[in-house]
Figure 1 (cartoon, helix red, strand yellow):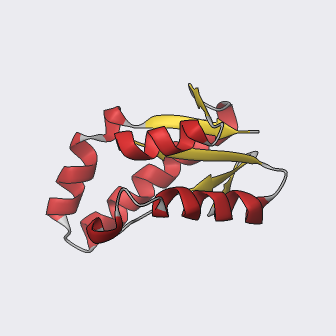
Figure 2 (tube, rainbow, N blue to C red):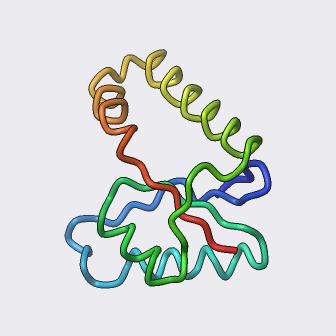
Length: 109
């Protein structure tokens, strides 16, 4: 989790494939929401299962979440890609880069 503009972003949720479809992702998001408290929460995902979890937890699909938040998200994305480039993680850059347009943004107020 990190502060992004006026939001707290839940940036990565990983569930081992042996534990998927058992409510683990939902439980992780619920704990994060409880820990964050009364702040706007932002999640970006291209995973349909995570999108369903977010929608079931009252997250709303949104466009860009405001100028500063969108600017910070864009900067963070380029910083991550640059970091991967420095570490020569070309496969990872390819996987993330080719699906970047598929990400949907969800917000919880």
